[in-house]
Figure 1 (cartoon, rainbow, N blue to C red):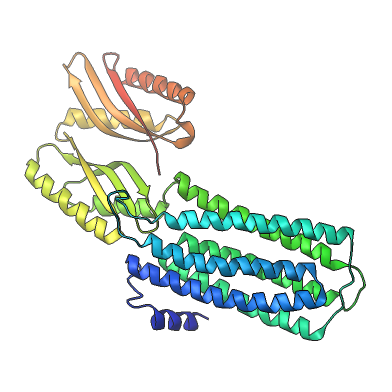
Figure 2: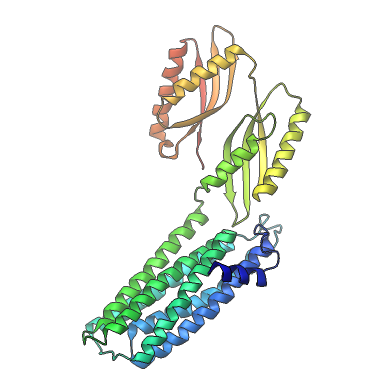
Length: 393
């Protein structure tokens, strides 16, 4: 199928390889929406004719479900168009989150459809109606199955290509549709060999799948809206790219804000030597912000954290502190280490990154006590000022 998918993309999407372009993303979304509308409408007509002809609640239920899918395809096209609107004074980072809001609306509509057909199916179980087997009707249902499989594979292909939550959600929904359609077609075939009223029971199962797909979609979308942790590969790519620049020896306090697919605002602290001329460091940071931002398709802001590294005493003390911290459960890393005071009484100032599961009042008190005890094991004359940072990634 990939050959067909490649052909459609090359035929209908100009500059299809520029997947980070908002205009190209809109074209991908429009193509997915149009194909989805055509296929879902075709399946809707087939199932509606068969369902009404045979008076089958499960087939009719899935037909109406495909009606919502067809409408969803239209909304998909609209959402990509709105999401592509340029930034303005009220929305300086654009309208990319419209994709997430659209996905959430899809999930709510799926919940409603699933509930209504669950109620109708239970009523059919309690008041069964005999469904006669019809060869033509069965063949029509069988014909709809490969169409649904094609739609699922194609939507998945597009969703992965542009990393779109809307298209990935649509692909997940169409996969559920494949299972539902297979079950409905099988139940129709069973009526040829038994008089048992399977229609109502099949309708209940169909409704369960519909409600489940709505739940999965809602959970995934709410994660983006509420602020889920960023993709680990993106975090690693940002670290690796920034560290590749001269003078930058460490990265911490990385925060990624998601304003929609392809719209990331990233801030981080970069550790640089304190004895390098400030203008030279400024040029390096400016270059890193622009080049890394362009390469990873994000808006990057870098704050510089100077450190002193040429003192043997400083290096030795830092290594001892790292050894102490490595033995404390919940601490991921240490940064912004500096020392103030005279030889007889020094104050160690530093930040530690604490794992999410340990970032609460009780655990933080325990961690601070362990740090203080560890520093006293290095020297009783040392005291510390510790800032605990949460790991946002």
